Structures are given as structure tokens and as C-alpha cells.
Image (cartoon, rainbow, N blue to C red):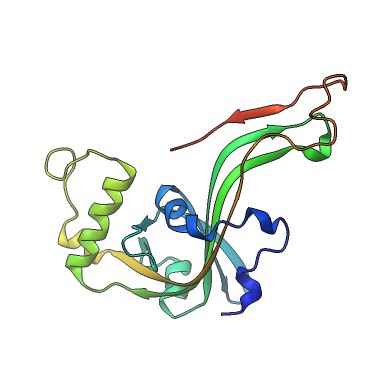
Length: 191
């Protein structure tokens, strides 16, 4: 893996690689970037991630999906997850920002063939997105036909970088009570 891919250049002080597993575990949408027939693509998807298996992230979708076909054929890809924690407003237009936590992962995927493993991944995804729901009580578990009709990919993480911005506005006039305007943070934290 090229070191420059995971090196944070702008705002390197925001680097939080130790938080990558918790960010991936808390995120809700992954954006998968890949190249298909020479054209860059970015597709948002639900995913499964468990910090107990830190180098794997699971994706599921239809067999005919161009993304799943490309990844199953070994295309290199990146997966990004961002959690927006707040909107930061400043007395200076240029200093408006966001509080966030994000991870970008690089790697390749492989198809999960084992039906029992696919079923376990489906169960884990439902439990992660909908805590407390129970198969057989709240929903019908995946049938063998459901499992056969769905591609599950294990995205094998080769490298990642994580970054977070926290805190209030940092504009040049935000601490000056005599300067006109307002500043602050609108909290959006998901977890």
C-alpha cells in the first residue's frame, strides 16, 4: 500500500487512527469507490463491521450490481465512512465547518461463499442497525433462496486512515464578543 494514501496532509493534528474501529462500528453508510470500465464510481451502501474482526468489512447486494461484479473480480477499492457530529458556524464565512469522524479504508474484496457465514453476517447487520430485533419474532430470517440471491463480499482492509474534527468555531473573530455575528455548534451526534 502506498504510504501517501493513508498519510493525512491537511490538518494532520486531526488524525485518529486508533478510533478507526469505533468509527466503522458506529457508522451507518459506507461509500465504496472503485473504477468500472475506466470510469470512477462511488456507491453508498449499508455494511457490516465488527471491531472483533478489524480487517474485514462486509457488503451485500445483488449479483448483477456492477460494483459487486467489479469488486468480486479483484478491483482495488476504497471504502469511506463519515459520521457527522455537528455543524459549526462562525462569525467569518470562511471558518464555517463540520464536526465529524471519518475513516477511509483501502483494499480488495472477496466473495463469501459459505451460506452459514452469509447468514451470520445478515444477522449481525440486522442486530447492528436495529438493536433488539429478533429473528423469528420480529422478522423472518434469510432463507436459503435469499442467501443464494445475494452477493456478500468481505472487503479486506489493507490500510486505513481516520480523521476527526471536534470543538467549536475557530474563526479569527469567534472569541471577540465585540465583533458582530454569531458562532457556535449545532449538534447532530448519532451515537
